[in-house]
Length: 84
Image (cartoon, rainbow, N blue to C red; front, side, top):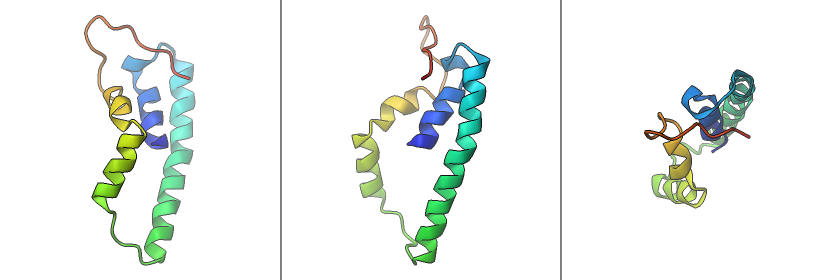
Protein backbone atom coordinates (compact mmCIF):
# COMPACT_ATOMS: atom_id res chain seq x y z
CA UNK A 1 0.00 0.00 0.00
CA UNK A 2 2.85 2.36 0.75
CA UNK A 3 4.19 1.92 -2.78
CA UNK A 4 0.73 2.55 -4.27
CA UNK A 5 0.31 5.70 -2.20
CA UNK A 6 3.72 6.97 -3.31
CA UNK A 7 2.85 6.29 -6.95
CA UNK A 8 -0.31 8.36 -6.64
CA UNK A 9 1.72 11.20 -5.16
CA UNK A 10 4.16 11.03 -8.08
CA UNK A 11 1.37 11.22 -10.66
CA UNK A 12 1.68 14.77 -12.04
CA UNK A 13 -2.03 14.85 -12.86
CA UNK A 14 -2.85 14.38 -9.18
CA UNK A 15 -0.66 17.03 -7.60
CA UNK A 16 -0.03 20.75 -7.95
CA UNK A 17 3.68 21.04 -7.20
CA UNK A 18 6.91 19.51 -8.37
CA UNK A 19 8.48 19.52 -4.89
CA UNK A 20 5.78 17.24 -3.50
CA UNK A 21 6.19 14.95 -6.49
CA UNK A 22 9.97 14.91 -6.06
CA UNK A 23 9.72 14.01 -2.37
CA UNK A 24 7.25 11.22 -3.14
CA UNK A 25 9.56 9.83 -5.83
CA UNK A 26 12.47 9.81 -3.38
CA UNK A 27 10.37 8.06 -0.75
CA UNK A 28 9.22 5.50 -3.33
CA UNK A 29 12.78 4.19 -3.52
CA UNK A 30 12.78 3.45 0.23
CA UNK A 31 9.36 1.84 0.06
CA UNK A 32 10.41 -0.33 -2.90
CA UNK A 33 13.51 -1.47 -1.01
CA UNK A 34 11.41 -2.41 2.00
CA UNK A 35 9.06 -4.39 -0.23
CA UNK A 36 12.01 -6.14 -1.87
CA UNK A 37 13.52 -6.98 1.51
CA UNK A 38 10.22 -8.37 2.77
CA UNK A 39 9.79 -10.54 -0.30
CA UNK A 40 13.40 -11.74 -0.05
CA UNK A 41 12.80 -12.76 3.56
CA UNK A 42 9.64 -14.62 2.57
CA UNK A 43 11.57 -16.46 -0.14
CA UNK A 44 14.36 -17.38 2.30
CA UNK A 45 11.73 -18.81 4.66
CA UNK A 46 10.49 -20.98 1.78
CA UNK A 47 7.27 -18.94 1.53
CA UNK A 48 7.02 -19.21 -2.23
CA UNK A 49 3.30 -18.57 -2.73
CA UNK A 50 1.28 -15.41 -2.38
CA UNK A 51 -2.28 -16.19 -1.44
CA UNK A 52 -4.26 -14.09 -3.86
CA UNK A 53 -7.59 -14.16 -2.03
CA UNK A 54 -5.99 -13.14 1.26
CA UNK A 55 -4.04 -10.37 -0.45
CA UNK A 56 -7.15 -9.12 -2.28
CA UNK A 57 -9.13 -9.04 0.97
CA UNK A 58 -6.35 -7.13 2.75
CA UNK A 59 -6.17 -4.59 -0.08
CA UNK A 60 -9.94 -4.13 0.02
CA UNK A 61 -9.77 -3.48 3.76
CA UNK A 62 -7.10 -0.86 3.13
CA UNK A 63 -9.24 0.84 0.45
CA UNK A 64 -6.76 0.17 -2.33
CA UNK A 65 -9.44 0.69 -4.99
CA UNK A 66 -9.74 4.34 -3.92
CA UNK A 67 -5.97 4.73 -4.15
CA UNK A 68 -5.75 2.96 -7.51
CA UNK A 69 -8.15 5.49 -9.02
CA UNK A 70 -5.56 8.21 -8.36
CA UNK A 71 -2.91 6.44 -10.47
CA UNK A 72 -4.56 7.48 -13.71
CA UNK A 73 -5.54 10.87 -15.02
CA UNK A 74 -8.19 12.73 -13.06
CA UNK A 75 -11.80 12.78 -14.15
CA UNK A 76 -12.88 15.65 -16.40
CA UNK A 77 -13.22 19.04 -14.66
CA UNK A 78 -11.65 17.74 -11.44
CA UNK A 79 -8.75 19.83 -10.08
CA UNK A 80 -5.72 17.95 -8.74
CA UNK A 81 -5.83 17.11 -5.06
CA UNK A 82 -2.94 18.30 -2.91
CA UNK A 83 -0.74 15.45 -1.70
CA UNK A 84 0.12 15.00 1.92
